[in-house]
Length: 505
Image (tube, rainbow, N blue to C red; front, side, top):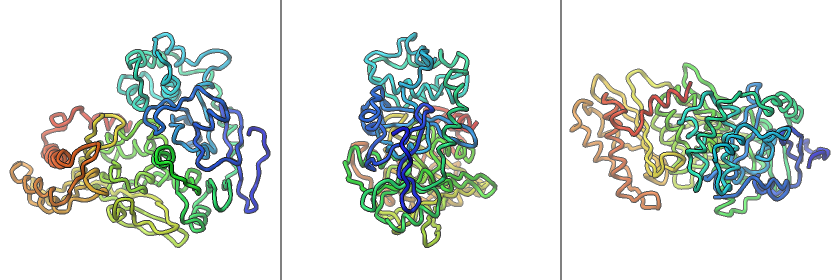
């Protein structure tokens, strides 16, 4: 707890996590590696304002804010405490709904929620307040409806309705951005910097532990010594293994303190994204690479999921319904893996072997993914279909990179998610599309029919096999219409290409 002397293991690792809560230094040791932040807040800190709703990072009732130093500035983001593990707050400033009032005065967001009747039963209200708090402290001004909706996409309210909540967000944003909270930013940053010892964290023993190596060398050694350990990135998937599947995971290696995995490099060679780059950080860079990638990331989960979840984690777990993998496969991305034995690279599509099986050797971890630049005669489209527009898993996700010689297709890379046990290229469809005339839709039909040879989709609670097969065909035709020049405004619900550019600014 706060004030305890740091314990140090014989190998020099710190045996406690360090963080600040509302700027006050705290230290926690001897916790089970599976302990969630929500359980610690409610059961140990007695911070009961943070609620448990869905237990899977979907409803937002458990939202808290975490502040971390980034490029010399303390940045706050919303996270789902129900699936975030306690150990993951090492090096962060934790802010809960109890911490917002300063000097007896409510935060402007709290004041506005009261004035605009933004709460009824109140169960979801603390999480909504925390999402709006982050938007108020970190977001642009003035706010429009789209910005507020994006910030609230991960907060479900079943009784108040969102109109008064939006009104509260607008009213709070109209006030000065200078708050008692923002005035303390420099002190909070200094308190965090004082806790950063740059060393490894290891809590537990060889049989049961939570570890957070501080650099690549330590990570490589730890993975080599414990190849059976679970590698933890953002916990947006692993957290559900614990809360829903009730898995008895005993060894956890969190990658969040390895700065080399958080590199994001843009240049003439394309874009290289480190495994621990969050979806929120990757979003602007991907939008600059292509507006469709930007729109895909805008609809990727919620603000809480995008802040915690990582590009490498989304790829490493090999989900057949992950949105990033099919988009990057179609783009032509290369995956880089690393271990104590060295590094190796492969086309991203080769990483996925079968459901739950990836080409990752014992002791190996995802290092980064590299996307080459889009060539002048190439066009790219990616399209997602889901039951809900925001914060929903895809029923079908299609991605298309088409090269043309004049108006005829000369090369194609096509990949789908949700259509097979892994994200996978559509080889027969690609071959059938070569030579098709963009001005003659009749020449596209062979490729449309070839999809049946590439995929045998399954029935599940998200969609039937017949629905998936039809949607996959329609997405191909939709993408070709757009590439042919008919314009996204005619084929999409919203003008997403403008939205993607806005997200990159």
